[in-house]
Amino acid sequence: MRNTTMHRAALLLALGLCAAAMSAHAEECPPVICKTFITREAFLAEAFGNTLPPAQSLDIDEAKQAQLAPIYGRRFPQARLRYWRGADGRTAWIFEDIGKEGYQPTISGFVVKDGAIQTARVLFYKESRGEQVGELSFLHQLLGARANGAGLDRSVDNISGATYSVKLMQRMARTALLFDSFAGQP
Image 1 (tube, rainbow, N blue to C red):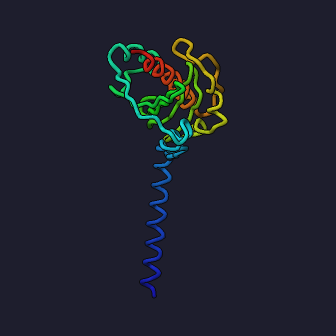
Image 2: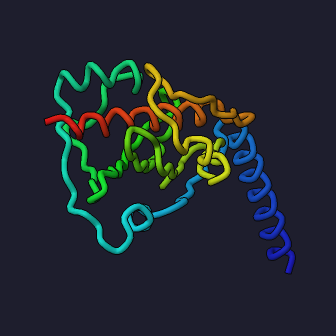
Image 3: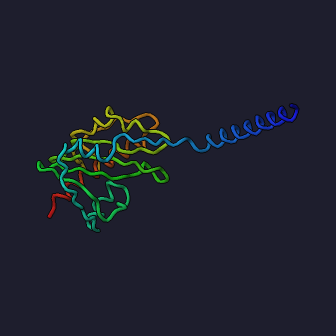
């Protein structure tokens, strides 16, 4: 019986030390949020209904990279990007970006029609804060946005504690508008 009590005491002490170590580590590294807002398939079904147009690809050559750099903030990481074009000219784009160097990528989808954002959605968000950019109440601000230089033609309200994520979504929306203009080129 005495042996069991000593084992329990040792176990409680070990658990306490582990909890203290985890707590100290948690202060150094905030927990990462991994949230799927909508799947790729559901986003495309939302954009095009039951008749998904065939995927097309956009080659991102050096000339396009040069136009992307002031908007995207660096070289776009892919040489080819998949997109979808509906019969009415709408294009759908799914790609990822980071809020700042060292952050986790966010995957978003945009539908563009007639040079304006028709739909903006966060598909997957993985960061320690700022997941509010995936909420429809935030994304509604991007609807109807058009290109204005390297930015958008409208102001987007910031979210306290999520400045990088807000800037990320504005940059991604502007990038989708540029991709759409590239897709319209021969």
